[in-house]
Image (cartoon, rainbow, N blue to C red; front, top):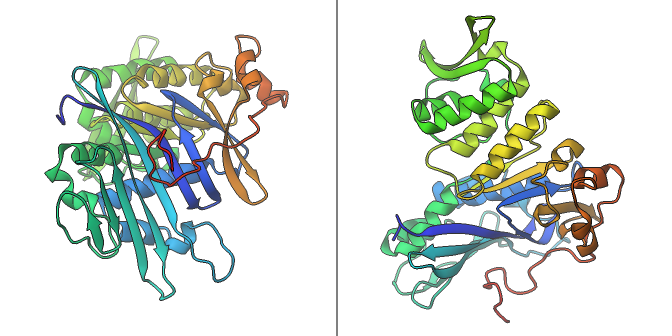
Length: 393
């Protein structure tokens, strides 16, 4: 089952996470998040990272890396303690086109005693696979004792193939704020073949795909972005991983390390690696894809993102008219993040705006013209955080 079923992330839900009180991000194959600085786009990326870290390492460590629960929980009135929660809705497609929906996530609430946390964790799908964990109590098909302060799904996933599918999908959700400076720093050789958030282990990830079709795919697109590049390799030097770029110039081949190429070239490499790393991500989120990248190169990156959106959900944040004028940016693929009265909210474009997007009146043009109108109501879940789509209270 784990090899033949396809798991698709359909939406991400946040409750009292940073500035989000109640937010529902429904994903398209390729989703564009548009919003001003400080609206909450980066918070959405961090929510994905927090969930992934919580099931890969531990909830306790994931929160501690961020300064504790109070640092990520929406500010509340004095004396009021309400839970912060993150959940994901999945669609699982089995052979024969049999489809199953599942919702998994957790809520965590700090009790009045410092350091004491109450955890609610749910997996909602068929009757046989659903479970609810309420702190130390567990209701499901197995009798287990939940670990204090941490999530139970990683401990029981191997006992049910659907749980295991969802766990691996969450572990393969990746969020990126790529840093060309860190990518050029020649870090020590590591063991990971998955790209870290800032892209600093790009050499290790590139090494893992060298000699494969994915490597050729990356080089071809990088050569279109930066004229003359015919190869990029990961080399070892005194225990460090060095990126080496080969450029053809007037019949000669010149070699450059990462410190000698532009930030735009490095950032583009990071985006391409994020899309083609192994194992393939279930979701790739890239913050401000336009940073340091020439407008003519953006089209190559957006085409690459669209080409990979069949197997991987791709989410790109941007406030660049150039990015938002690409043909892939349709009205149905755009979500607008707005910060109003101390709260971040997710909106779709209004129906009229979605219909009016075309080759001339692009989303980018509308952004420049202050004509990017949203629907009247934000995207929220008005039931329990873990309710299935279409489920009534």
